[in-house]
Image (cartoon, rainbow, N blue to C red; front, side):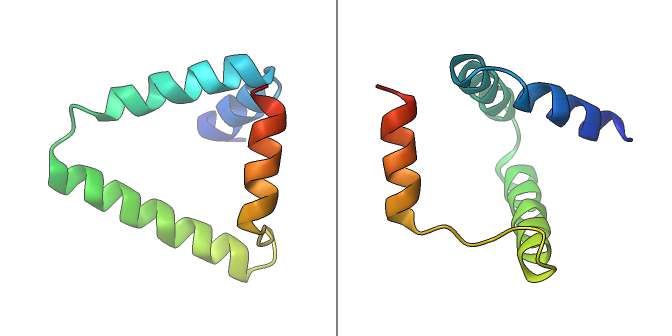
Length: 75
């Protein structure tokens, strides 16, 4: 298992509040990146997600479901 896989496994075991705080910290750490580097990283992530979806390892979720779940989590 890679370091990233281990970190993700641990992060997913956190409660919603701690995951949100972690996500905020991680996003903030990217704010100092040059725009071209950030665009390259987002393009790589988009490609990774598309490949995951196409391989059947992820499923599409309706936007309404995502919004409903977010509202429940952050009440």
